[in-house]
Image 1 (cartoon, rainbow, N blue to C red):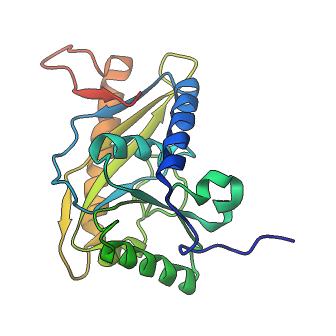
Image 2: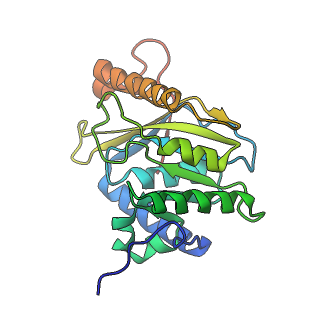
Length: 239
């Protein structure tokens, strides 16, 4: 018998499970990539602030890159990740590490996601949680323009408000080694207090940081982190 289509009420967050999964996924990441770079520096966000990681979606790995940023930015807070319901049952771990399954186009599924986010916000235990969301809704190359954000981001921001949205650009490049390198770049945090979120503004900010990264790679290639003229680009290794 096939399993029922899950919705956001099902996903649980168990700290021990997330710790074990982190160990496994970062070990696998080091095997599959020669490097994972975070360009620039992490923003300073007051502890307990609700945050939405808003990222482009370019690979299977994207959500797990955000796991690492979560551990660096707000390790004491919980991260819940919106994912496709059809992939939720692929592994036991997705059920216990804060994954919130959603079925695009399903009004009831979207409604349950927003209700779950509101409950998390109103609970003293989880009020300062983080959420990762991919507004493109599907995997596309990082150079796709326009990025094509869905209005679902407006609903997520409304359910979590007041909230800070952090645009995160993701690009993967083979470079000069057998294993590829991943580049993550951050946009300016966008504070959303209430009302209707300007999704176009968030998309424009993420487009800007992605374009800047791609232009740097185009101009410097494998020398992107070398100080050929002026200062070298600031970056942090994510493993």
